[in-house]
Amino acid sequence: MSVTDLTAAERERILAKAAHFSPPEYTLPDGRRDLVGLSREELVAEMAAFGEKPFRAKQLWHWIYHQGVRDFAAMSSIARPLQQKLAERFVIGRPEVATDQLSKDETRKFLFRFRDHEAVETVYIPDRQEDRGAVCLSSQVGCTLSCKFCHTGTQRLARNLSAAEIVGQFMAARDAYGEWPSPKGETPRLLSTIVLMGMGEPLYNYENVAKAMKIIMDNEGIALSRRRITLSTSGVVPMMDRAGAELGVNLAVSLHAVTDELRDEIVPLNRKYPIKEVIEACRRYPGASNARRITFEYIMLRGINDSEADARALVKLIAGLPAKVNLIPFNPWPGSAYQPSTPEALKKFAAIVMNAGYASPIRTPRGRDILAACGQLKSAVENGAAA
Ligand code: SAH
Ligand code: SF4
Image (cartoon, rainbow, N blue to C red; front, side, top):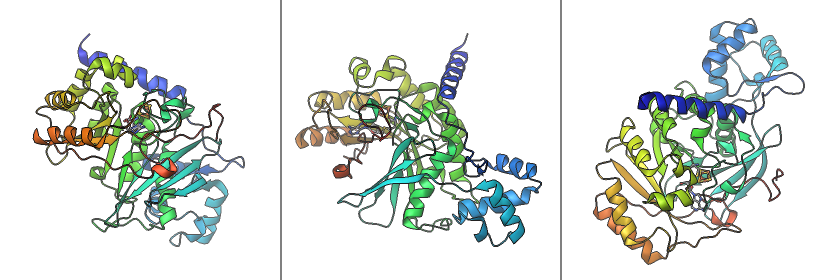
């Protein structure tokens, strides 16, 4: 068996496991079906079964994803009797806003609840100077991976999110800011980038994440370019190749340690895909050029991974890769075992990485007062019941 066969087998295994945590089928109790989250092909098929031609699907796509309309009665290019027929059979859904919190620094955290009462958190982080900002989307309810510094990791995986629920987080956030219709081309957007850095490991829910991103990138709808989307992974090597080939979005890798010994402990997935394999997958990632650098995320834990020797080992590890290093100050959460690095340690570490030729921004924590910063998200109470 070649290495490629092994990777393919591993990919199959990951996808089979993901199916085990599949989201429920979304049909309402009254039998109506949600149109959000269907791929273009699925929407065409749905319309065909309904007795309508493909151009109907094209019209609906425009109303749903470009105009952001939720009511068939507002679809002025569709005749009234057909609007009524559509409304009897379909809905254009959104997750329910269970809570909506605003931080002192304008970061906004939503808890979105789905029809089976599972919930996830979504965060909007506005730029401080300009009218733009990042939306941090969740991909799973909980996470299987238990990284030691991460609050989400303490919540066991309940299930994967569907494509509708992933797209729905973005659409509901856009509703909250009234950003419809979708701005075209280079027109500024308030919700201008997406980071898949919320709850969950996106590459353990690859099919749904990929479908959602294809809907969001579609030019006749939301039309957000793949250059404005960043997928963050803790290093699911076999799926990194697939994401690169099929989606071509920006890649962020949660590295956090420079030795397997330490990474095994704080990012347990390292026992399966050690540092060397993760870095090799980064080297294979398509489009890795200076304009599209890979981001390495590195959480700064006091006395654990923040020495100058660690910084030097880090630049050696990523030598030759077009990359930047995001230094993330550790965000504490109730019961967490680590301390954030001192400002001096942070500065020294950043300087070493920078002098080696890599941008090394220290990420200012945002929304800490409402537990909306990196790694603070969690949607269940301690006993595991839905919050
Ligand atoms: N599962 C994916 C994406 C979600 S986590 C991943 O691990 O990459 C998003 C980022 O938040 C990761 O880089 C993660 O390591 C970081 N993070 C987790 N807990 C944190 C904490 N307590 N403080 C700061 N960053 C944290
Ligand atoms: Fe999961 Fe990412 Fe948190 Fe690790 S850091 S437990 S992979 S969400």
